[in-house]
Length: 299
Image 1 (tube, rainbow, N blue to C red):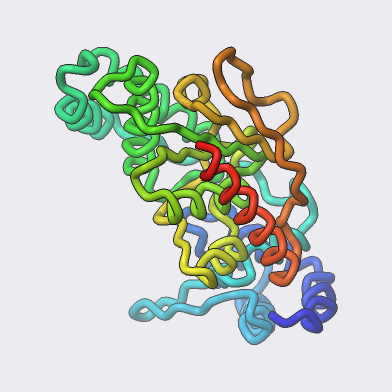
Image 2 (image 1 turned 180 degrees about the vertical axis):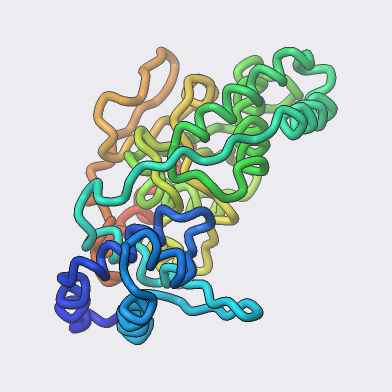
């Protein structure tokens, strides 16, 4: 949606039913809804709901995906950030995601026990898998891919734990970027440093209050300079990733990051890109790139 479309967007969502439709779609399992489901939840006739859906689709706020004889509606990916900014804070009810079954958690634990064989006991691996699952499940927005995200989060934490003891021989410098949501500044900094340093530097990122996904504007701004977030996702800040870091870079997360001796702490005063137009996000990206290059030269 163009900048001039912002006023039109506000007019469309000023209609309470349309705003409520978007809230219900965001809160739905898988982030999608059928007209019939919406009509039932809203207590309205289907033709009335269909009219509102047509307006939202034509405005570019919703995607319409036919599936056999049914039609699913979901938030347009390119507009997800803007919709989150326009909808009233706290308007979307919190929803606890379905947990991962005990059998799946046991399989993840067994696989990671093989990966970390000789480094950690199966009991330690199982404990980290269970805790990582609980931390992600507490974030009510984490619904999709919870098993695979649990496995990745647990593996990353176990890697960090191993690095504290210098397990595995030569240890490269480790840098941790921390911001509030782990969806903007810290993801940009981590992506750029990975891009520039390759395997010469270990890079992690985390958030004091992580959100659902990396912002689409961040992905776009990085893609423009040939940098990918490589499937990264917002994750909570945990003790072992701080302990594993040689350099901890904070960006607006206040006192959330614990301080341990022997580490270098940097605080980068950068504006939060959430809700900003792409031109402003690009400026923040370029500022971060300059800082990351200086940091890399100092390692």
